Image (cartoon, rainbow, N blue to C red; front, top):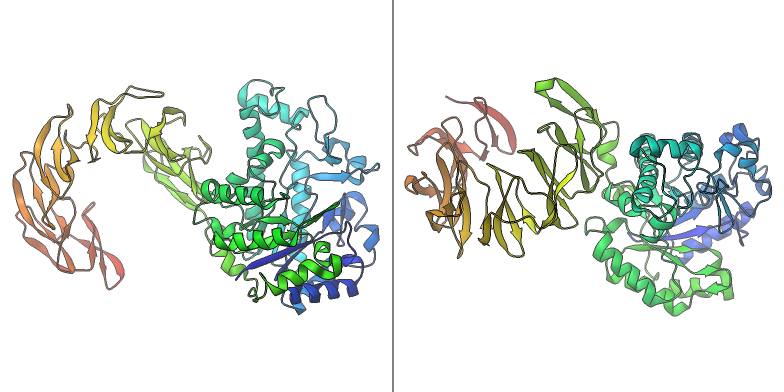
Length: 619
């Protein structure tokens, strides 16, 4: 399935003026090769459908141009007739009006206005803005979306460069100032691009989008959440749209950054940057860029349009969204004819919401929560996260989308969702990965050892294995900040954590063991080596596994095809295709009858037979 979308506007367009125009437009789009349309339903303080929310709040149910009709309902019927999906587009988002002397919303609710540092209502590029941080304003916008979700048979819902968004000049209203002061014990800075001030306000919008996503999917789980923000990071710096966080947190099912450049080389530059820096391979199916074909006096050249679409496919992007419909119809439908004859000559396939949702987190978030228990304090935490790790030293790693953060035992977030890897806290520090480098945070969420390592392991017995460039060494406790010194030099090809005063390390493609001074204790003879546990270490030699003691002597010679550590006097071991449990004399006290087997814990072990898991007790 390709996603071939088009925006339908009320500005410079007659499509929504009549049922006949709508039907003709849907026939035209289906014939050209489109499979999804994004009709505007909210702009200039008015809806393009009969809205009870607008009627109850402002006494105007629909734009007067469409009074007595429901253009959205008409469009849905006509689009369905030709197998085109409909995703209503809330064009203005948190902007209340554009160059409109009598602002419908702010005339009645002036307290809803966004305020800048001079205490004036925020007006930017002709748009007057509502305060997107205000809870009443958020509730109003959410209710507009929800009434469309509940009342219409649609494939999805869309916000754009004004939802969720707010000019970075905004945020100087009394409520937001008080909120910032309570958290930081200081007033907001005058510099609207101050990094902390910028991120703090962007996070408010991202938190609102989190709520927005959850409320919609709990009504209609298969509904597509689509956003079309300004290009990141420009949109973040100027409109507080942290669209990178939206993707990382799984808050969008489709994202259409407005790559509205007027030459192909600049368009290609941004697409290349998205793929290299902003979207992982797993996230890439969500990326369906917006392409500008008409705006004011600008018209895209036929060569540029074809080049952009072909380039999208060449880098793995399975669609684009064109702005806007009327650009296809000019010059006797020139661009539409070009698309139909060339890049859209083959059918796109039916727009399939379920296929898109396969790449989303909806299935984890509909009427579910994870529960984790801190037994020592008898705390049960019901957390609205995609995943919750067990508590360790008072904190737990939690996951939203593709990123991790940490919470304390009350469920309060201690960090942002910044981490690609977040390990349990060990010896007062937790290992984290951020932007391809590893560092360590403390139990309050503060970064103690800045990300500076290419790989790393958690602290154990006062030391942590870390990788710089292509070699491993060890750092010690007590060092903080940048350029933490190595207490054991980086001389190793690989390294594991210390356990029982020894650590397995690799040199010249062989594994051995060192002590905490870096001295070689057990010769480098093994193909692989694990940590010591209860005086024994599992090693691999000539494709077989066995166990050694701390003198390097074989307690159980290598003879197994796979194995695990001893626990409670027994170890899982594999001969051929089956697992059983051996004692320290290499005797199978539990015969190898299992397809898989885990170590014993509290007298019970998890085993698999025929694809089914269950527990056994020790004999």
